[in-house]
Image 1 (cartoon, rainbow, N blue to C red):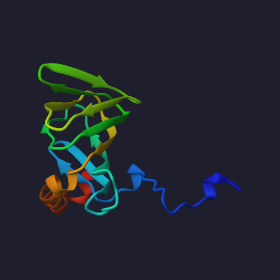
Image 2 (tube, one colour; image 1 turned 45 degrees about the vertical axis):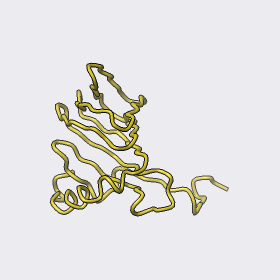
Image 3 (cartoon, rainbow, N blue to C red; image 1 turned 120 degrees about the vertical axis):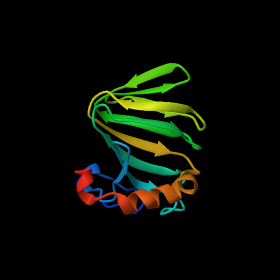
Length: 139
């Protein structure tokens, strides 16, 4: 049996190119593919994709842990006078409550994984961004 043909009810696969609900935040595009609001049995707050053009920047201070897994390009995350740069195949861990600034050094694609209480903290903001982000803005 070809393992590519196997269907498993518990395993989910997500592809950035198939995501329809992108949100625009500053110069950055975000798409949750799984979050605790829509999958209450998930032990994670959210999993999603991020796309940012070179030069995009954003300040943050998350109320939850977040992991950034760089797929393409490079980014820098600064917090408390420390800088970390990551490129393809590298991972950045941002503990809850860490204030900082994100900067795309090159056109960037990454996967983010957030712990709970992602849904509770972002519910209103996410609904607002989805309502105001035109579909053509995420191409």
